[in-house]
Image (cartoon, rainbow, N blue to C red; front, side, top):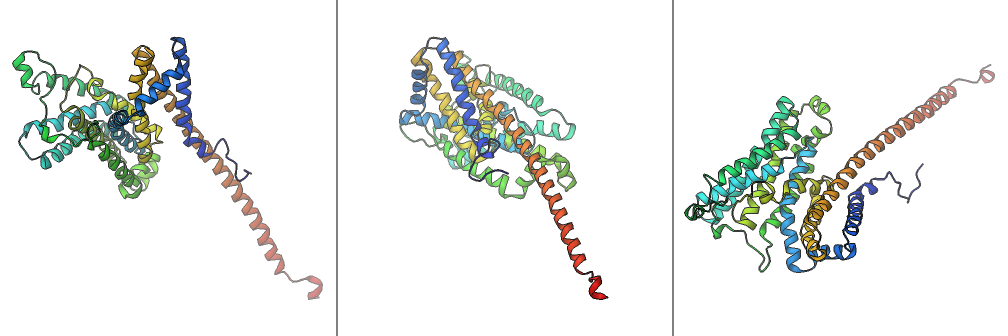
Length: 396
């Protein structure tokens, strides 16, 4: 029996703090690496915090960096809840950015109240198509979605490189014969409103609103219930009459739509054009991968992903200040981010094992309680029968 008022090591409350513990462990390992490079970890981490949250501009930059992470993380929540693993956020981000930018460049004189929402819609559709292809392959042919989404990332990157050096290249670059791989700048009228003098734009608020909507979708609608049911047990869902294949594909499409929306908002709020250095990270900032970690850090819950994305946005922004302050190689910053990813993902796997162990313990306790109840019920029934048998002496 567990005593009331005490938290067991197997308690779900401990699970809620596992991402925080994982992050502290990663930072501890990072401190050892800093010491090995001759840097003071206290000074380094102070610079990191100051660079992320030390001023209004720093805080705004953190929110701007967290915005695409939140969009991608919300998509990851839907995919994972639907029982599929979406590693294709980078490609879906690029597909959405290109699709939305093409609309804005095709209608440069159009009213912003029509062009901007239309661009967002087309960008989300582009990401949905790019995410839906692996979803259909998974649902219809049981193709491993991890492999297919990773390959779709590469197709998106190479497609972007091809378009930005050909059909979508900035005409000014052609005139100057410089051929920098980028699109023309979208009309200034289409830029998202900003909180002057910072870079914080309306896209951050849209991301938070979208997190609430995703929560309502997953936990307050029939569609969300079916998606979560398919993710928990596809066989039982199929037996209950749910079309498992359809909801697997839909989960990936919705996930891709949110990543595509992240891409188009990145264009309209920050970069105002699509550009490339030959890799996806040059434009996306690896948001497609960092968003996965943000979702895991938030326990795959849309509302939990909000502070998680904010935290990782601060980590990415503050890392630049850390590097300048203690003069460490840029590879250390990449390693530090990688350590956080590894520790957080590892704790997520551990949390799942602990959840299964608790479920087994609860099942055993329920089974034991049922047997005990059956025994007591048997004694009660025997007593009731005995009470109805007349005493032999009295009857004589």
